[in-house]
Amino acid sequence: MRIYQSWTQVLSRVLAAGLGGYAAAWALVFALGVWLPLARVSLWFLMGQILPVPLLLALLWAFAASSAARAWGWLLALATLLAGLGYLGKVLS
Image (tube, rainbow, N blue to C red; front, side):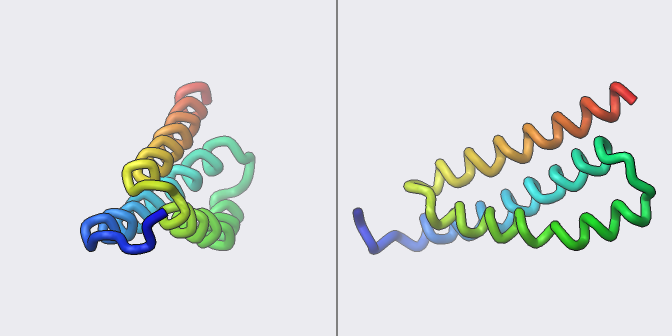
């Protein structure tokens, strides 16, 4: 395993952590907001408490993945899956 990476790979991982983590975190908020039977105020409070967790996990995953493309792929796939679950709940309700 190479320890040295080019600056483009590091930049790609940083962007994957930031943008992919942001997308996955807000898709999680959307999905939980649709599926959990809570009042709006309680839901926003809960989301404010748990939102840093997926962002931190995305940051860790972006630098633990074997390649930058894999980091992007998994984070965007997770965001798409969660947004799809949220949309499905919105359509069914």
